[in-house]
Image (cartoon, rainbow, N blue to C red; front, top):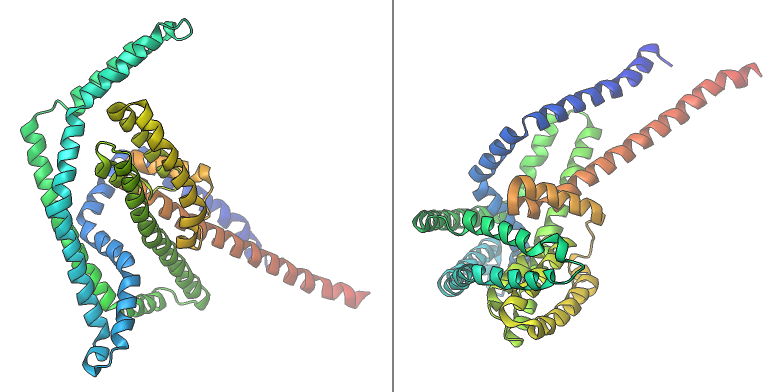
Length: 393
């Protein structure tokens, strides 16, 4: 074996690990500043992120519409199937957004206001219950009611009793800004759907320019396809499953005559984006709110069908929608969601799972590819070193 090749093979992994350790150390040493810059960058490019999100959601229905237009008898329609399908999706989504803003949002806003105004009452209920629990000799020495009252009063003073005018002004500004970004994202997604072949060709040409070796180009293209598959599986499939959760949970709550049924159903649908934890958190949250607003009997009546539906969704509905699993262990999901939520809030919790899945797949692919190359290289060297011995024998 070549001496220089041996030294390079020996010291390159050590140098690579040292660089990784330095990068990790400097990252954690300046974690707060890095988080601020990342959040600012996400805020700036949020219309593009919304566009990618809409593109993944609208891809399948737009493809079906395009197929219907191509089968139309009129030649004018069949030749312009792509553009007509994109325009149709634009007006459909615009109609849905308008319906949500004019009809659904006022009802949800009033529910949120009523729920927030009743938080002190709910805290009072819980405090009274804990005070009665404190009379029990087993729990009496822990002062659970006093600890909860101190924590809840701090929570109320921090988040609820702030200046109403400032909160209302910032809420209106953020809402208007969010609507503008969503509309920009919708327009971006339509252009992406319309010109998707050109976008794919651009990335292929960029890949050829950046990497000269064919093996590196093929591997990079494979990684990009894996990223696209994971994002499509998570966003499109989870989005459809979350809509099913929203409708089913809201229907259960309406049948049981639960207060804030639409708001709680929306929360359950959004939390469903978080695998494993999301559904559990949603059931617990809905049960607690139902217990506080409707009593124990109503909470039990809601809890049983919710648990039955969650089992049906987890074992039958979601697997048939997603078809391919994200293949993440529950421990890794909990860790990813915790870290993402700690540094990037709700958005970080939603994005933690697909990002972790992408990183895991790339690392697994890279390590398996490296091990395979090492095995082949070892076999080749063994054969080459064995040839002279066989000649001497």
